Length: 274
Length: 263
Image 1 (cartoon, rainbow over the protein chains, first blue to last red):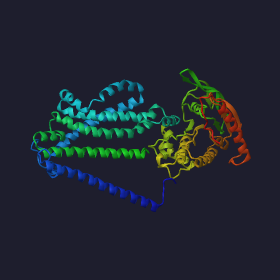
Image 2: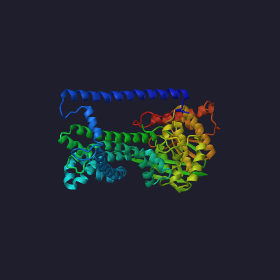
Image 3: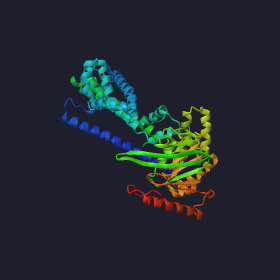
Image 4: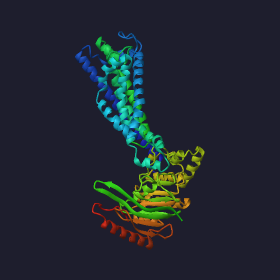
């Protein structure tokens, strides 16, 4: 059968793949350590308060998890939970609105014609530009949630629309010649076909949303949050803590985007999309 | 007795300066269990004809009767096999075959019984859980054929089903299709631009003209199966039809360049 090969050849192939992975891992370690080395050298050379050396930052990073912060009086874990709740709230809201709207806009051209001008007008506005308005209009609780919502909404929406539009006409024809009605076409062809596109939207949306949470917490957030922690640490000259907060955001962003990207490639592989 | 009757079919498409006549004066009766090949150069409207029979497109005038009932919309009584396979990539082989049965709300046990039968019939045993991307073109089209047959259609409509396959696979699939046809005794309408394919498969070959697509000639093929491509009768038939097609291409309007007709 096509695609199958003898066992020993398969073994050699998997050894090759592992060797390649090991080399890649080595390069990643080299990349990160050279970054740290350059940072360290520059910090030592400049010797200024607002650029602490890596060990100072790493120490602040680890201590932030078990020593109360001098400004906020809480630990990093609590800030992550606070930001995380805002993040999940906003992201969930974006999913709940963007997915059905995207499906409708992709499926029904009249809805698309109606909604498209509004969406195209609002889309170029950076999510951060909404922050002052959200703050005044909806207060400290909703401001970060809504900013995350704006950040995640458009990538999800546009990708879902793209997914619905990308359905191969022959797939719909094949379904119709098997007795599928409009509702079957939607639920059994268009919806599953759009899932990998939705996943692309989610991956992109996650990346944008993490930028939004920091920006929103900058603007008068109460009750902490990682973004707020970064800003208040900078303003009160706890520069090592400021960088520690940046590392936390980097790790949160990296892990969620990687996870979502992995899920996306898994689904695409199962559907034979490369 | 005729199972499918096409009567004075006409199809036009709107154009900037009036209309383009794709099919005109097309009448054909297809007998129960018959294997009909519709042969013509590209642009002769043969795919449009098949899509109208399938109910995916409407005719401008004329009508098509299936078992004396007028065709107005798509239905699972006309199974269709597509050149581009059109399988659902997120469904495995079995679930692709069960699609139409799910829509008809056939019970899970019954679905499984039917898909088992057609997996066996098209020679895909052991591949039930494979996804389309894991299959070769020939295997994908086996799924396409089984999927159409699983709905127990009255006629099987095939739109250049082997057009995307390499020459060897194509020949193998032609043999396989004849075997499946003989086992299921289905009526088949098979679109192709390959003279060789039509001569190998058909009980009757309908040669079409280009723009407007009309019936130019009909050949009854009485050679017993399996047919020997090297036999003098086969060569003679192929030569006759090819000559007719070539005349057609030469006399076609200048807007149509070349032909896909293959020997």
